[in-house]
Structures are given as structure tokens and as C-alpha cells.
Amino acid sequence: MLARYINSPIGREWVSKYASQQVGQANLNGSKLRALGIPLPPPTEQIQMERILDSTFARADRMEAEAARARKLLDRLEQSILAKAFRGELVPQDPNDEPASVLLERIRTERAKAPKPKRGRRKASA
Image (cartoon, rainbow, N blue to C red; front, side, top):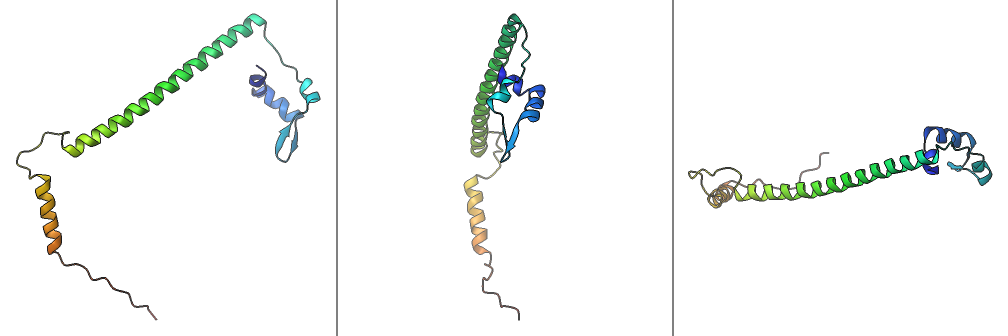
């Protein structure tokens, strides 16, 4: 409860008022901290607040775990879709299309026939 109070807007305001800054870090000594007045609700309300907070944090933890599981499933789904795409299983294949091996061989042949550009040193401009 103390940490929650100190991190509240009221607690932060008090800390900024009474903390001393040393090398960019806020410092509160024990005597200053003892002077901090913390308004507390009745014990029954504190218990109820604690239950609500615990329940909320537990739900957040469950949601975080569920999101992690969903990310893993999405990764596997992406890999599966890519694998199917490379196998040609995503769309119906046209029987009139040439096989990939024939296409690759045709590309190799065309590249072999094409003249290779000359590579040489460039002259330095004077």
C-alpha cells in the first residue's frame, strides 16, 4: 500500500516537495519519511481494495499469457502459410503452366546467352 500511495499523484507531490536531489537522484531520509502522513481507509475497505487489485493483476497476467500464446500461434501460422506458398498449395494450379524446373532452366539459358558487362577500373579524373 505504501508504494502505491507514494506513486500516486498526492504521494509524488509530497516526495518532490521534501526530497533532496543529489547527483540527479531524489533522496528521502528516514526522519522525513516518518513525517509522511498516509490516509488509510477502514480495514474492511482496505481488504476489499486488495482483493480487487489482486483480481485485476491476475486477469492482466492471464491476458499477457494468452497474448504470448497467440503470438506463438501466429508465428507458426505464418511459417505454415509460407511453406504452402512455396509448395504451390495456396491456389489451384493451372495445368497449362510450365513446371518451375523448366522455367528456371529457361532463365539460366537466357542468362548464359546474354553478354556480360565489362568490369574494369575507372580512370581517375584529373
